[in-house]
Length: 444
Ligand SMILES: Cc1ncc(COP(=O)(O)O)c(C=O)c1O
Ligand SMILES: N[C@H](C=O)CCC(=O)O
Image (cartoon, rainbow, N blue to C red; front, side, top):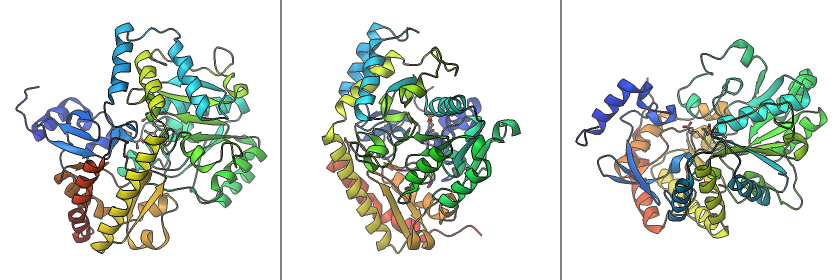
């Protein structure tokens, strides 16, 4: 495209050629208004748009950029892999090495199957649970997002929540009718669903810590209850760590919430994506061997992928996990702590009722009196917040050179490259953004 076009002109051209001008709906600024920022490059804590303007980035590619954008050693690993070939459609030692790195971090994992997206990982995990149990039905929680496969789109978080949709057109009744949607953090609803239909339920799939309706941590004991109830009824527990895995800590949310030597709960199947591929298209499902060996070619549950375990993606994943040591998590945690405190102070200073909810270094902000008074525990409460305060807050941050996820239902992401200078720029932008949120009015 000609280099002199404005952002608006590029977006208009994109809209002519691509639905909504974007390749994934959450990028479209649908709930905040305005023109999406088209990016040209990214490095460390920064992204640069097509006009050359630099921003401090709190999207981090929606999670993968734990080490910051374009970490030199990750880029080098990908470049080296590229010189050896882009895709073979054959097994590689890199897959074996990466599977071993995953297993080393998550003790209950015995085998790993690599796929290209989180959607594929959760879709395959569901099929595997159905194959393992011979049962048709699945339980998911309202507000959790597990990618865009048919059976998992009901009451989904992320872009579905942002657009205020109940699910998706194009999903047949047949595909959706075996999905039972329950309120999150409600053990009684879970027990009641199993009491009513337990013999037909193959699995419960849950985000390890939901981050796609905003950040809604599991209430104390909720993940344990899912474990107990599924075990009692012979169903499997699928722990979706696509977003949290290798990000909230070396062993994901599970490691953050459990002592590896004496875990309080161990899921049956776990899914990964995002950080696992270090910015390249890579995801995985993993479990004990007895379950994983039901997958083809050993077992009857079919799953495949031309680009699965792609050599560039596995190279990026190996480099990322090698580099993501204790000091990386310490820095992300520290930067996140500083930012969470500053957000709270800025919003309180501007008299904006809010709550910052967190799980380690992952967090989001909910606006509103109710949210501030009792926290947000489920999707209904997340939807009831003062959504209208987010758009002005978002745009004030953007004007000041800080990119936030363009939806109040998404978590904010930091990286170990967010140094003090980057943090200062964010902190400097907060008071004006808080004032913008304070002066926002609900649409009548
Ligand atoms: C928890 C969770 N599961 C699954 C997915 C789907 O992953 P992908 O977008 O790579 O298909 C996402 C994000 O998109 C996610 O946050
Ligand atoms: N919330 C999603 C992932 O976690 C956002 C990514 C996308 O759907 O494009």
